[in-house]
Length: 291
Ligand code: UTP
Image (cartoon, rainbow, N blue to C red):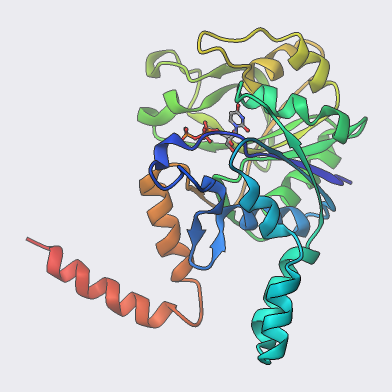
């Protein structure tokens, strides 16, 4: 059973400036929910009941979002807005939250390391909120089931076009164990296209074991001054098998503008109250833009 999930959210979100100057990118909205809430709901659906958010300067809005808002609840109650009241109570009741500051954004590996004390000595998940995954059962639930089976760290992987491999950590496969599960031979962070061992890219979900912490502590900073999680995993791979798992679902990388826009359209078209008028609207602008 995976009880804890670490959500690294201390990055600066430079790709979304100026929107992220005074607002964390995790709070950008897909239809009517901030991006990070999709990940939190996914974790809750997988049985996680403790979320450890790794934050930095300017991230207070995330804490407020998951906290109880007495003023807002009183206001909605007084006006009989029961539906909205239930919706915002659901957010604050979702799960227990703990916050830890990263101080300086020294990389994803470092962000995971600052959560070490709060994680303690048990397997845990890492969720990168940028990757919003629509899946049934939830992506983390699928991975937790794989973890039960292989009893070792599980990294979510996805086949990406070869032109995109250099944006990801990429895995070299030792063997396929069936049903989308692989034993990993090696990992490379952001390889040039010609040097990529495969097109299986690591996406933003991990189930890790606590021995990742000493491995990360022993991992040197890279050329960019960051501690990469991939490099820590590579070190751990010398001590124990690590597995990749192709999640069955639809992933949106909302960390880049095009991916974000696609996700807004995708989720709006899945909303019963919006799908029909929105689809109609999209058809009209598609027509206008055609040469
Ligand atoms: P990204 O590579 O997307 O970086 O980080 P970023 O700063 O969030 O966004 P851009 O590239 O400047 O637009 C991947 C994930 O790791 C977290 C980020 O918050 C994001 O969830 N992260 C990254 C940290 O928590 N700390 C770090 O030092 C680096």
